[in-house]
Length: 304
Image 1 (cartoon, rainbow, N blue to C red):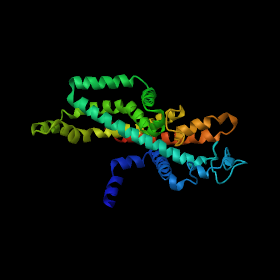
Image 2: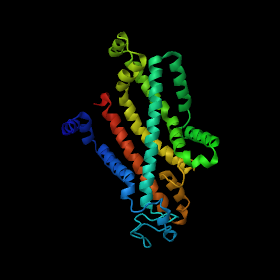
Image 3: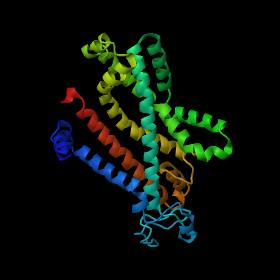
């Protein structure tokens, strides 16, 4: 275990990270946010979803450093008396879970379709790529809104809150798969003409096995970089949908929902209810994007 860690620390990728200040900053901020988000049940001073612990007399309290603030509510409270700092930790966890799930689903769909298109060629490739081109001509948020709206119109009203998370994840994933498909398709076209693929064909290896065990490992580099950048995009898309009221339910608010709730009180003086969730969203997306930019440059052989 220690030897493996030492080899990784001495690798070119680790050396590049150690000598890139923006990557170090992005990694540290991302690590802190991830620990705070996924450790929310243990780190949050209050449970914002426990109705028995919420006191309406503590509603709209300013941050602790303000005149009317309380030390027990570091960043103040919202209109329901929920601790804003605790809500931020839980909300960040929900945003990250939706972001990760949608990125993984988009990767699976895009990689499979990209492998099939690049390896099969012909009409199969033309059909898959034309569908991807048509979808890419529309903004991802519009595609996600369309899919989310269709799903909500089909599902019975009493089940909307139950299926809101799967629908949101599916909508974001279906809006993002064409990027993976195009990337994998281009790399697959290059790889399928190389000697190791031709050798696998000669000895009788089946097409699915060649694609999954021979071609796929050699096209994952650009996909991982794209997934890192797409995570930030997925978080922004989820926040936008939640801000518009078609995302996660108010009973399990994400960062976008918290911003939407706080927006109603912004001009009445309770600025902290929307400013702090907005800053958390900006910090999260910025740190992930910094890591994605560094990873793209570190894995690009033309820049090394």
